Length: 568
Image 1 (tube, rainbow, N blue to C red):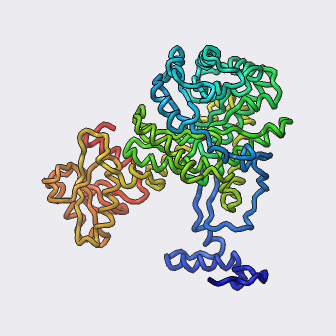
Image 2 (image 1 turned 135 degrees about the horizontal axis):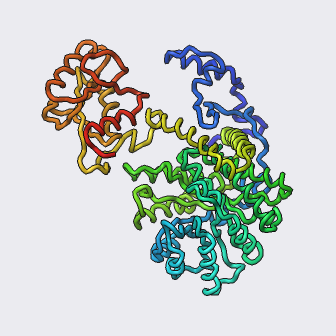
Image 3 (image 1 turned 180 degrees about the vertical axis):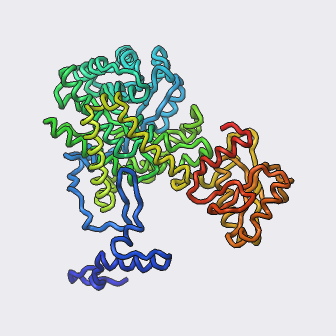
């Protein structure tokens, strides 16, 4: 074993420093080999990735990409964690969602790693009258309960408080959240909120139940409507500010007491770095609001993070396990206090016991086996994460100010302006999805037709021209595209033997020029009602439409399924 001398020399001392400009020149040289003649900053820009909200991810971050000092965990601006110890003591709170009065399912979760319960109560969930039956056998002094009752929040809260009293749970031992969120309910349904009941519950909790919070600031409605990360942040801040005003003016609470009545709910997506940055930025921004309101020590945001319902697919639902695992890792690394992992079959209806087990075990593995919670703010200090946190915080604050200029969250909702902003963001994203510029594994890329929900599977015949070297690439592309719509590609035999009604030519541009029109006419004669060509649009007689990278795949597949008589 070689022992290095302790002479104060760094291990990298023999390597000369390389400037950013030198690196850019090297990048430009590589890009020129691929046909891109760019220099300097343009070379770096060519490797950048555009995000929503006007943000870009650059290919290289260095110490010069500085960001504001994030502070220490548990201290303002709380970027690194809301508590000094973060989640290191026992990991984050594993919170499972339930919508039925199945006490057996609740107990099974609590006995196998779940540490709190999130109950949907009222319309579409557990009837208020059945809340006691749902919680039968649950030790309410040990398991925090979080309600989500929409317009029935007050009767649901009173039912839960009666259960605490009937079961001898001391008021100081009750933990959880009564779930009042009048603006979130209005965002989902358009129904006018009952702010007075939320104020009454907040006053009650502040006076008698120190471990209970009364309100949830739920950003999921805006995320599910297609909002970007900055829009989700801006809406949550505007909602939180509206509740601070209501609680101080209508419930008579101090700013510190009002802040202590709020829990914030955010979505975690499979974009792990954006999720991490969003949670860190949310804490920083809320700390700023608390500071401006005169309560800087009350700005530690309590965060409940849910794996995004928007990213869950009905087709090939097993892939959802990968998405939720990445999202959960990001939530934990981002400093979430509580995490809900939606079951992989969430988009198909009520989850079964296996799906619930996988959901709760996702957090358990990350906490107990990967030891993710043993490090406070594990992504902190990374130049990219710190820079992205700062940029996202500015974008979120800008959207928050936009809402405030409209008169606040309630006014923005009722004017329709907020809905228009969210719809515009979703339109841009849906275009990327339709054109497959934002691929969805198992749906638009590598679809698995064995999991297709169609009872009869339509077919398309892939007419390959020439040797494999000429047609393989485009045949593979066309196969993936049609399978994304549940259409089975067939390459064996003739068109008549395939059972298809439509066909797609697959080959090279050179062979298209020689044979495309002839083969298209043969397919027409054999009964093909529609002939596609895999490649850029041209002028080939007999070809009806073209499929290519960047085409509107949704429009192509929707039209094809309509012609084939398949309901969508």
